[in-house]
Length: 168
Image 1: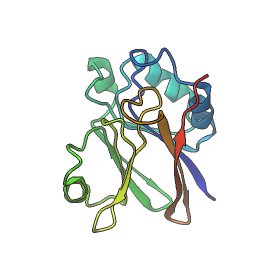
Image 2: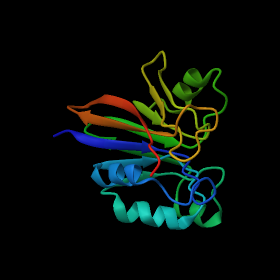
Image 3: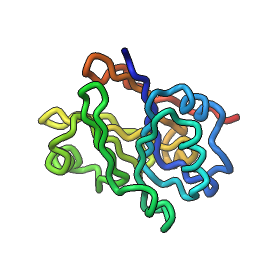
């Protein structure tokens, strides 16, 4: 049975937005698994994700304070239908990212990360898929705010797509 995923990072609520757009909450509520790669800012947002998600895989980011760091790990892993996921907030500079992450996350098939607010979808020489969903609230130099959706089906990651966020 296919599993629908939502990948999200860098929500920065309430600093970059008062709340998440309804479109994002709708995606979260309909996903089988939600990955959040950090920079929540307020513990109340984590509470809301825990309430609205069927399954949440989450880490803290560099903008997350002591309570979020107490509740969340720096890195997380999950195996979904045989696909091995790892997640971390920060991977360092873009130059050399694939090789660096390949060495650090050699047991993973997919690495979800955030921090830059820049969407990223590449594959390392050994086959590690690196995914950064951007930010649903702070586009920085990007044309739009974003998150990602994907499907795990039959032991494979499929249908990875970047979703543009439309403001409420």
